[in-house]
Image (cartoon, rainbow, N blue to C red; front, side, top):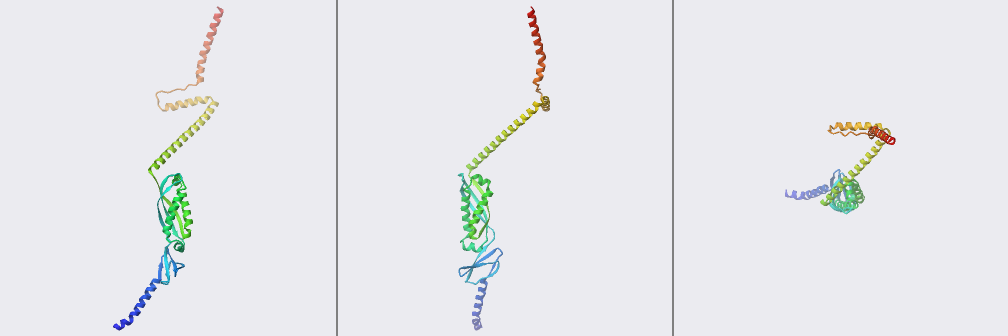
Length: 271
């Protein structure tokens, strides 16, 4: 029995080694993974997904994930073009489109993309004023995305989207912005009031021209005004009287005074 074990042991060892070598040569890549293969240190192709077989020791591979990755850009201190200090952070969505470039052209594409995103965020936002950062965020997102996409293309990276999440402003600047907004609203209110006065004046001039063409329409306007006053149930009603009506009432008295004056003058002359 010991002789049998001694004779079969080398075969068992050789079989175990062969099984281990075969198992080490077989690899399975998921649908979203690719294997960048190197043969004796030289790039020999990209394989996957599915079952791949590599020559042990002679060939090595690097597993690359092709799914969209989310990178949170840390908060950056940015000085805007109008010299306002703000803190801005963003999030970047990107994915690997060329697995071989992402391994060969850059040591760590995640770290490289993160550092590039931070510097690009500071440089792009530093060219804009604070109002543009707050009001034109979509445009800034597109500008940053285009710059990152063009610079990471050599690494086999496609930047799909960039979103600025927060623009933090210190308390003193928040109060200044609030005062500016209040002054802007007051200015708009004054302008709207002035435009209303101008339009009212133009309408009054048009109404005056229409009433001047038909004097009897003024009397109708008086009656309409009295109706509006009576609807309020006031105890005192101011009744507007046309000047022409007063002149018509004063005319007979004036004629009588002139007649009496002429009569006294004639009597004095006869005496």
